Image (cartoon, rainbow over all chains, first blue to last red):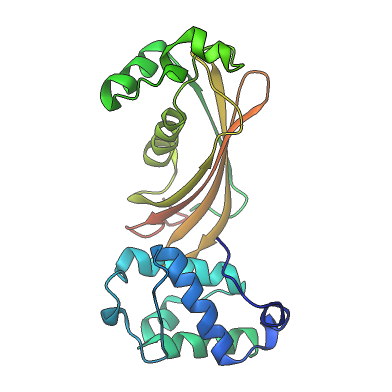
Length: 96
Length: 138
């Protein structure tokens, strides 16, 4: 299921605030793990979320790349320390 | 090394022992799959083969035919728009839709068609290459 975004957020995909990116990541991750109660914050790490294992991490990255129509490198992914770093990397690629 | 746009074709036949074997293994004896009169009463030509038999063919393709080593199916989304019957001969067309190099994942689209050329099932699958992707030289 595609992440649910407001019409305004969808229209500003190419120039959206970091809070919108975080909201999108939250929905994408919830879809990946099939868990609606997930709340990701900038400081969240994989260790903070029970379902965030290595396989779900791969699915999460694939879903992010498809949704934002971007590509990461392995080095970029390895450098992320928390969700905030993911948001910043996405923002850098989509020009937010 | 697979890339977006690569295509593959396989052929399968729904042998009666495949149908009976599936029932013996999983116990789904719903009359749609076992009672000819019941199936016909619902408008089907014959008893309908379990859709997940086709999923077995998908697993076979990924494990035995896909040209990458050390694969694992991460996800799949399958649709069954038309029934499949005993002794049907099916053609499986597979296309690589996308490659996510960052995490070694390939997204494929799979389409089963019967002898009449009618689409009977389609699937999207994400395949992880846990050993990395095969280099162009191998």
